[in-house]
Length: 289
Image 1 (tube, rainbow, N blue to C red):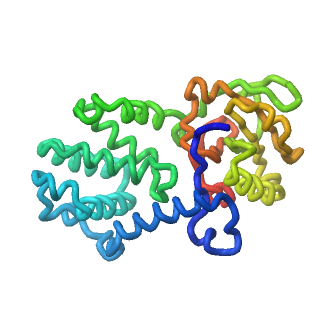
Image 2: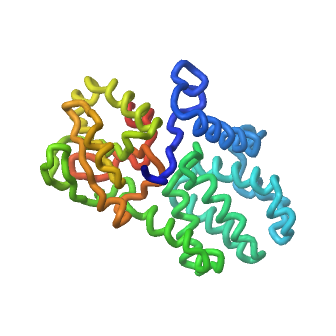
Image 3: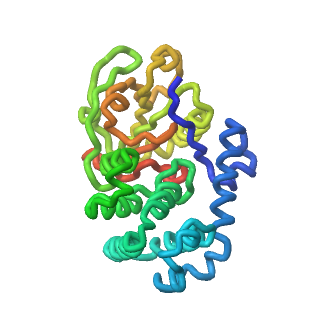
């Protein structure tokens, strides 16, 4: 069994509806995480449309107590929501401006920590690799001490740049349950859905069922589902059952060489016919649309 965490994939509305099921511990952890974000983000909605300077207006970056306060996190959450309305150039400029201000006051550690929590944590409903990359690019370019002395951020920087949306996905070798060898690039289909999973993972079973329910839709759209197992316990994978229209493969090199950024299981990547990434680390609801 992998020590990779099982991601709580469903939105809270689904959890509280008729499809609860799954690992209750994971469910409660996700609820706690989301509740914390909701508390942190209280009163955000009314202020989202305000200019960026209003988010940080009056905030004293040079005050360590203020930087570590709940207020700082609330402002940061509003800042992220405001960023969603900006184009990529504006996002880069505003994140750079924030970190430059923090750098002048020796406060970058706090904001990198918040960026990781909100944008990279697999259980965060706000996770966004592209936005997190902007924080890491600034930290790497300016050689911030909080970045250069922290191998975790350096690893994140390398991983989030892999298999980005709009870029060609990394090729990998695999073995099917029938023992046949192949590579991702050899597959031909209008769309390929990579379903990274563990047969013993309850969340994976939930997502697997949802994907199975989309058989007709996927057939119409030309989506080939490739169920990818990357961990060590091969017997569990060999005994698992998959729809005949799917391709079930074992690809340990993905994990050994860190070819894909698999933060948790399950993880979904949607590729087009040229193997370009359409959706990365997608939620089941995004894939079904």
